[in-house]
Length: 492
Image 1 (tube, rainbow, N blue to C red):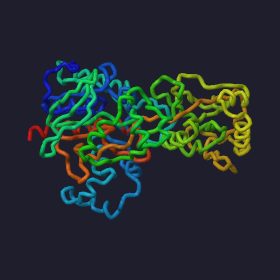
Image 2: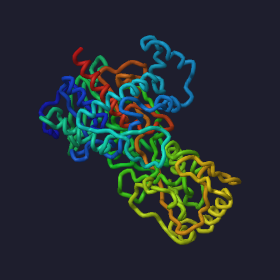
Image 3: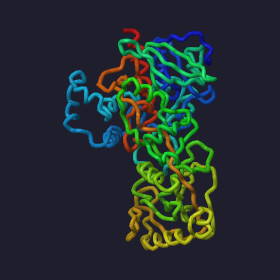
Image 4: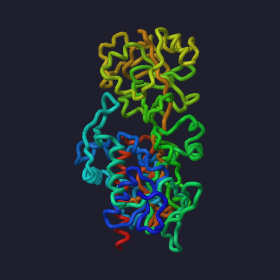
């Protein structure tokens, strides 16, 4: 295992980052004959980026097929209101499409179709490293699509692929090294990177191909403030791995004219307990209770539909509250719901009191305002709640409130009363680079930048709402596409 001690600085392919996208790219290129190096900001025991800390669900109905709604969900979230007079040229062959379409900031449907087609192949490839997939327990009590994942989560992927890369030093590692700048020749081809290693030591590496797989910018407060806005100060990466993702891969490519794609002003939002030191300490039981901001008021419909399809939108609204904070409030009736504990992954106990006034004091909000909010809600709940069904939208709706709750509405009236604080966490950012179905980066003129690839979070494909259980899948597929094409380019 090398660590900035190699005297060799020339490679066929250099991969920046070692999450699922980077490892898939590096190993695929190596298996196709390339001499490969990985540049990784983290030390060896923390390699793997966000992948190391995720359960890595894949939006698939079995090992051979993606979910029924896979392409439809991407189409629903493919980028605002694009110009239809430009999109109509999608029916043309790539060679005959106008440059303005090729570089347009919307997701190429051919790329999504490629991910759908290649995902089963990527899964089978991962199984050759000893990884097993199955339908695993979720932190949702019910779900609106089909998901499966590797046994052992993302850490199993990082460990298995990392072990292969380490064996007989198949791949050269440059740990605790951050790529900063892309190097190009006089013909516009990318030929290397400039990086910074320990003690601010500059390093330049040469290669025929550079694959950027170093994540988004969830660990960069400057970029978050620029793109997301002032409320970004109240969000944090959902796991330790996200702190290593500081956006250099995206910035260095934009600096040489790469076309942007994906929603730069948004990110995959998850509701977490700010008191917890755990990774991904989600609080996903709120649809059965109330969401209260630190002014003691409700501010959104807690239960517009099943949580797995709506939590991201609700979490963004939490981010917009004062101090980016809300509380999920319940009474004893929460315990009527079988296995509700599966929806809460924080190990910090909730605030608890036998009175609503006492709970308000622990929440540090005005007791009178809180009591008024709860009383109004209780009076608006259906008189009969025998139709309560925690696993399906049950239509138990409040009436007469300025913001009604659509489902699972029951009075908050029976002690003990409990509350979990919730903030918005940033799982990964959406803005990235535009790539084609071989993960090659396009420039703002719609042309391929020779020698430059982007995989995983660096490639922008999401807008507004994350298509759940697709990020690790996207990383594995785009990484393999990049690694295979890089090796093919060397051979040609």
